[in-house]
Length: 224
Image 1 (tube, rainbow, N blue to C red):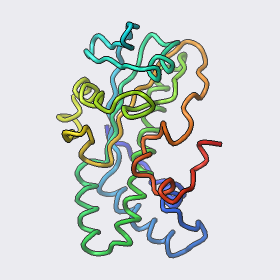
Image 2 (image 1 turned 135 degrees about the vertical axis):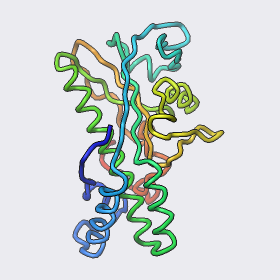
Image 3 (image 1 turned 180 degrees about the vertical axis):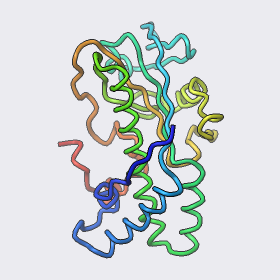
């Protein structure tokens, strides 16, 4: 589904490692945010699956998907079901980025930061939609292939289970990276008891390989 929403400007500026009081940067961020809000709003799909616990990991039988490792086991230990989620800004983001790389590299960098913030906001909106469908259940933190010890190769089966290539246009490279680049996949557990926050720190972040804050030797506060 398409989600009419705004780019979180403060988050985009934080990704840029810029001074929030810098009016020039803020103005560029607002300009690029407007481009994305018009041309590349987040779209997401999700689907619920039952769980089976096996020696080699947590298995989603309807999806034919195995989630190996201690990360999935720990995150889903109180859950009978899990939701698979995919969110993307789509090919329109890629086109906008190519255009701005030719026209203005500074604005292209700002567009990139806005895109990261926007797709993350799309995931948060998806979580809210899932919670509205299940007002009596508790959601775990969402976690993604590449987090902790959950292999990136899980992307393939996760996207297949969602029909994400047909429905969202998401494809995988041979190294399991997604195209369009501003795409996120995740698993969210559904439990009958409250779930504490278990995922904290760069090792578990979907942006860990592209985060401009981390590249600059700083942290966003999730480790606090």
